Length: 187
Image (cartoon, rainbow, N blue to C red; front, side):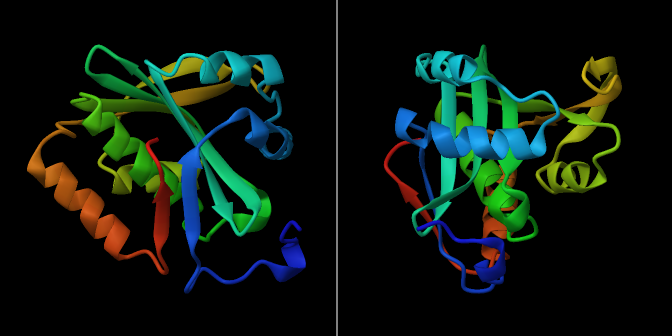
């Protein structure tokens, strides 16, 4: 049974499970994708990304049996590119994106990344604040990057993610989260 908006618990004491995205999660992933993006990714695109396990890491966040978010990382030549982060709107402000980004950053480091990058909408102040907590800084603008809205993207980078100082940053972010995060298997 899915957790509905009327029964979404507060973030305190919340247990979030993170697991590698599988085909069985895609119905829920596509539902969230359609809720949060004007031009959602297709089933075919997600299937293609899942087939590239050597250079991709996709995960889902669950609360109980419900998928409440998902995120992805592309790995290339020592860099990790955050391809997507999405949370069901009913679950915003519960630390779901923070937990997923923690897992992606740690996965990237484990798989040889020294830097992480992403694009974020110029108008998405909440996401930009989250990314700054993770050490991302603006490095440029991609004009009209989001074609469906003709919105610009800020390109952000976090460097030296393989150094002890970055691990300490991640540990501090995790320590501030209410409730546990359970990572199931390898992401």
